[in-house]
Length: 405
Ligand code: HGY
Ligand code: MN
Ligand code: MN
Image 1 (cartoon, rainbow, N blue to C red):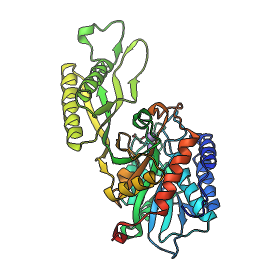
Image 2 (image 1 turned 90 degrees about the horizontal axis):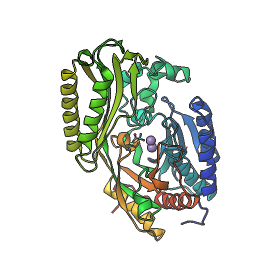
Image 3 (image 1 turned 90 degrees about the vertical axis):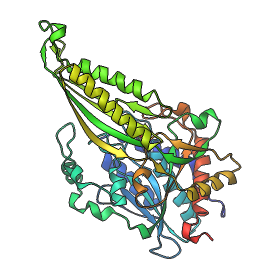
Image 4 (image 1 turned 135 degrees about the horizontal axis):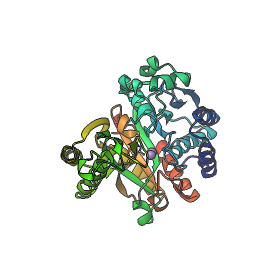
């Protein structure tokens, strides 16, 4: 590595703490923090048309194609401090170290802090990264949140112009690759005593909003055999999903949200809404499971004389990481005299969208107990230091595919 200005693990740690103090309502405050850190690192920085934070560090020739780094700045409800944020602040810190050395590489670097990867508010994910990849679906602008606010209105309220979202798209020729540092959110690295790993692929996923319409009724008067109980039907569906998805290794199925209406002790539930998330490393297996689950739910609802509506809200095929990027990330790990462990990602990431624009690579960082999407999410300062050094080495030694002879 150059005259050794290393990324500061402590600054990365503190920046994650600062973002963690921003609540759900403070996206502007979080964006302002990130844009400020980008500028401190020697980057130009702005919010793009969908609300991504975009920092740019020119190469040795202005306007060169760029290596895109980054991750997402949004989280799930009641989340941890590192899912997404770590990747953004670590990338900024790597540029900070380059800038401190006055170092310019033969390519530009863009650091992106993506808006809305998780899809918590509107149920559809990868919004910021899809806008960058040029694949954002404008019909999603009509999606509404739990307060009946449309995505279009929410973007306008945030000071953005939804009609300009297509301007956030990057041109394929302007991007050399995308690389993301992210916590593993699983137990493999910790179980093997490893601090970092190279991602091989991001598992594909289908998400749905399921509606079951039965008949609300008096809890005291309707005999059991005459009920059209939407919640009892949903409960049977949930167990059918669990049974089918437990039948195949690496296949997972989750019902994360469930709402019962009208929601009163003495009323038989007339309507139930629940979410469904099915994933697998193998697309054919995921799609077979989706078909089987749909068939099973339909049979349950027909038998119980309730109506079933299956609303797809997201589909992402398995996104393979590019072998040439895996090799360069692996070389950066090996240069730190660490074992190179390759593993797939059960969690979804922005690379599932960026893969439509450019080749993708990911560096995983160990997290305690593999816990994530939970305030107990935890990493060590030592692993922050190790992963940031690996990431900086990857960046400094990055060779675009066409430059490799
Ligand atoms: O759902 C996921 O896997 C990611 O955290 N968005
Ligand atoms: Mn997440
Ligand atoms: Mn994430």
